[in-house]
Length: 467
Image 1 (cartoon, rainbow, N blue to C red):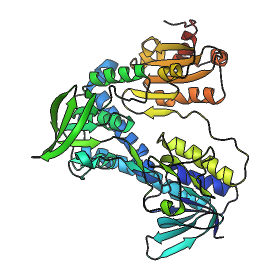
Image 2 (image 1 turned 90 degrees about the vertical axis):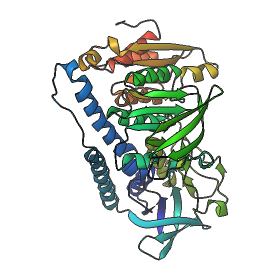
Image 3 (image 1 turned 90 degrees about the horizontal axis):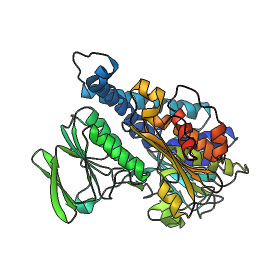
Image 4 (image 1 turned 120 degrees about the vertical axis):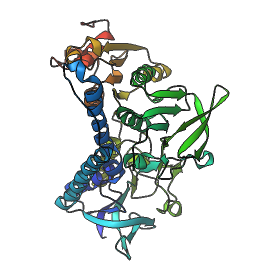
């Protein structure tokens, strides 16, 4: 065999799997048809956070400086430089992945992969970017080809690179749009809506379901919409898009809401209606790889129904999150190396980097009730937290959901400043199967916004101290 492990795709899941495989002594290769680091590092998670930071700083300077006793005579932004900074951040991390490949002696095959029948795992035929092809065999193959923005051609929701964008075009537009329509209110849609609004664009978000952030707890969704509306964003919920057309220098989107037709117009539109897996032209059909609703089916070890073939990250299943892909990549590599690891079951936190931020892990209140659990729910507002008051970050709250019979923490939901940095505390607690007793006994430092996590836990048992 040429290798012990071949990874197809170098996004967060793929390159992490390759590194872990190499650490475990597996001779490893990784195939990448575009940039090392994949979509997340080059066109997703990282560069969008750079944009959001620029927007956050500008909005604070132009709108809230006076709240801190500061004066700013004149504010402005250079949009091309904002975009340039984002691209520099992505380039820096892209170079870092290349360094990690060399450090761990992972062979990088630049090209497009296709699977063919082989033993003990499928063969990988690589159409090399430099020309020609190379066929390689390994003991195991990990598919980490990721996903892309879902489009709806039937109603015109297709990016054209000019007026209609997906996340990729929205990160490198040639000019700043004064008006913007965003179709979809999940994390991607709201993050771009938040960014463009922070720089002054008039933004309207369209959501087919009855509330924004439909995967989040209902209280969080409601609080998020209220906070974003306070910043000037507009929302059309329960609105079905029936068509998109380009007219003049802008776009028009036709809606149906409450049995009434409506048309919205703007300079540009962003499509953020979901993710579809990159499963085409890999050879899955020829191998008989099981696919369900466009995603590869795997077991608790990320193994497909084909011997020696694993799948991780966006190609496999929701949630479509980089940290989920990385976690699966490590697990798959360890399983291939023969390490005895239990099936994946750790709770996966989700983060939305709007202003205010949103973070959650585990069951929502509604999901816990649907499961038939008797629950205890706690809440604590940041307006009662000393650090939040001092920082001017009083928007939002922390919500906890406990199983009333066992005391197990089954869900946690947060909205407010830097909550994406705090949610890991609840994720760790759930992974360790903590109950209310362990959370009560944990000493939270003061003054920190994380104290709200402690208070929300206490509140579930009528023991809250500071409200």
